Length: 447
Image 1 (tube, one colour):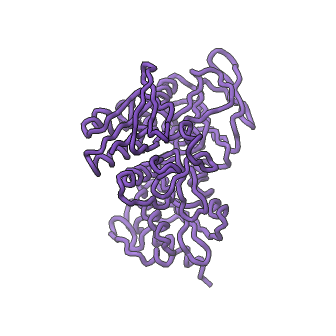
Image 2 (cartoon, rainbow, N blue to C red):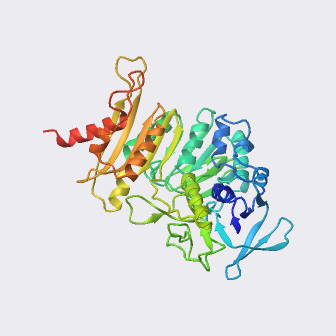
Image 3 (cartoon, rainbow, N blue to C red):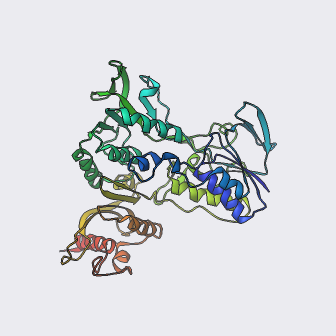
C-alpha cells in the first residue's frame, strides 16, 4: 500500500513510524513544507532554562532517521492541491517545480497555522508570532537584547516564557484577555496561586486585557496598547492559540463548525481514503456533549496511532480525551485533567467541588511538602469530573491517575478505598488522591 502523509510534525511522524512498524512493506511518503522536522515548540523554554545546549537539539527524530526506517521524506515541499477523485497530491518543491504524487491512502497532518492578527505591527523585528523553529530562533535572539517585553497570551507557553525570563533583569508584561491565566485548564483557586507567583517574581500581570494596537514612540521603543493601558516595549511575543490549517481540503471535505476537519472515531474523513489527525481535527471530551479543538501533543500522537492502524485495516477507535496537561513553572509542578468547574457547569452538569491543601509526608519527617488539589465531581453520582494539582513536589504522575479515574467514571467512594501504596518515608497511609476524596466525603456527610 502507498500512503502519503502531508505534514511531518508530531502527528505525521507518529503515523509514518506506526505504518512502518505494522508493515515494513508499506510505502510511506512524508511531505513537509519546512526544511526541518520534529522540533518541539516549547524548545525555546528548555533552552532558556538551560536544559539543552542548543535549540536545534530539541528534536527526537531527523529525516535521516526516517530514511533508515524506510520512510521517504520530501522537505521544502509544499502541498498545493489535492485531487481526491484521482487520488493525487500536487506539491511544489524548493525550486518552484510542480510535481504530482499518487496515493492509495492519504493522511492529513497539516496541524495548525500561527495566529493571524489584524493588528498593524510596529515592524517585523519588534513582534514575533511564536510557534515554529524559525520563530523560536528569532525569539531567543531578540530576547537577549530586549529590556522591556510583553508576552501576549497567558496559556502554557506564555506563562513558561515568563518563568524563564523572571531572573534576567528585564521588565516583563504578561497580557491575557481572560480573567485568569491557564483558564482552559485551571480553576480559580489554582490559577490564583499561579498568578501570585507571577506577581511575586516581579512580572507585570495584565488580566482582562486585550492588545488593540501598537504605536511608534521612538527608534527602539514602541507602545503596546491594551484595552486598559499603554505599555512601553522594545519587543513583543505573541503566544496565543493557533487555528487548524484546512486550506487544502476545505472545499471537498466535511468540516466542523469550529473549522476543524470532521473525522469518525477511526480518524477517517468524509472521503474514506483520507484520514486526518492532530491539530486539524476536534476531539471527543469526556463529560462534554461536543468535540473540541484541543491542540495538545498527547492528543496528536494518539490520533496518529489510531489513523495509522485503520489505514492498514486494523480496527482501533479513538478514546475520549481528558485534556491532561502538566508543567513546572515558578518552582511548582502544576497539572490538570478533565473539566474545570466552570466548564462542567457550561456543559449542563450539576457538580460539586472542593479545594484542599494537604501535607504529603507524615509530621515526624524533616521534609514537609504540601499539595494543593482541586476536585470536581458530579452531584449525586459522585463521579470524578475534573482534577488539578499544584505543589513544589513532583506530583505530575498523580494527574495520570486522576485522568484514568475520570475515564473509568470512578466515584469518590472508590477513590477513598482504592489500593494505593504507603511508605512512611515517602507519604501518608492514605495517599493524596484518597485523602482528598476522603475529606470531600467527610465534608459532605458530617453532621
